[in-house]
Length: 491
Ligand code: AMP
Ligand code: MG
Image 1 (cartoon, rainbow, N blue to C red):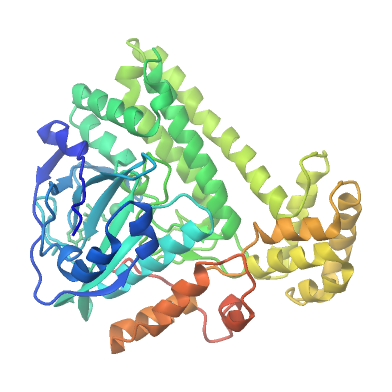
Image 2 (image 1 turned 60 degrees about the horizontal axis):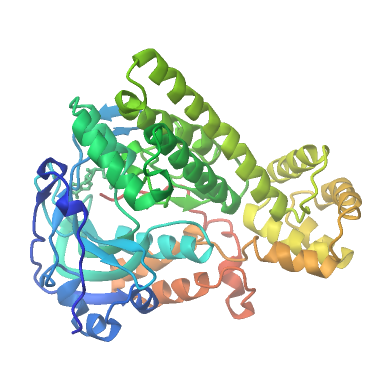
């Protein structure tokens, strides 16, 4: 195999940033999914990886140049600070630099115990592995910054959860695995030198434009806030609910990371929660911007000693940056929702109310979020499609007043109806990973080693903005009795 050229910048950081830990070999690894296009994009030898994938992506065979480490981090879990978490079941194999110059982490998840495992077994079950595969690749196809899925293997070993489940290992590719919680790990230890080293590494790796600026650590808070604000706005645009927005699950690169009990909303309701462990609804769909800001405040706190030598000044500067998060979010959200409604670049005062009225209509009429925007895109082409949109509402008659108001508004925009419909279809997906479809695919794989539904779902979700009439059923909301009300992280 053409060797993978690793360049492991994180492993060159001080030794207290990680532990050197190798994957624990497994009994009978089998490659069940390999992401060939992603391997090629990364400049890897896809043929060889496909052939040797079982050994490589199970951790049974270590590639030359790999320096496996488990990273240190802390985090706020559901608001409670835990000073030591760390990679308890993940091992970073190393970093590769893609042909286009971008650096990417390759990490195994479920590859055995590490010094950070606490009481955990370091393993993962097939269901959560396939869920992360499906959803992270779907997010990518939707154009949303995210970690990627390179491979999934089954281990041939059982894992013990509430029941006995087939074990699996997920191979994740990320811009980096540095989290808000990584900063918190050092802050909790009063280790300002390490925070500075980490911040400089992050600037060098993700925000090189800040290097050399005197106020670079304050700017770093703003820059991370900007990417998170944009990211969360895009989540809301597709009805995504992360499910566990703990500070250890927020990547400073701005990628979506750690797909646990995540899920997509069917019927529009900002209070929607799926995660079985989120009993207070802390991480509900509509709370995500506020939680994003809360997490940015936790990041800012860790950087206070570097922001200004006078503590009072540092707090004031950091507070302003945290406040700006919400302004940034509002700007991004307005851009996302305006595009979804087909409104042109020329803003009008009335737009905010038009947007609010549309969301209120969906909420009151218990309409499916994704299909409503998709059918509205059709209605943008001509009034003939209005009835199809209206049929998504509990009372189809209720669509009329809003639709006429919308058309009034569109008549002042320059675009032609067909042009507008095309642009709307490019931002309003037909396909999202519907929970009932995801669960159905995971159940078939878990119970019968049948990966055909998993494959089919991945294929459909790779082209979310195309109608794909042959797969029309994948676009449908769950029928009565098919709804999935809870999702589990299964760790
Ligand atoms: P997560 O819920 O995946 O964000 O993980 C939260 C923390 O629990 C992290 O420190 C993980 O490494 C750790 N963890 C989760 N599952 C396991 C497991 N099966 N074995 C060891 N550590 C785990
Ligand atoms: Mg996590």
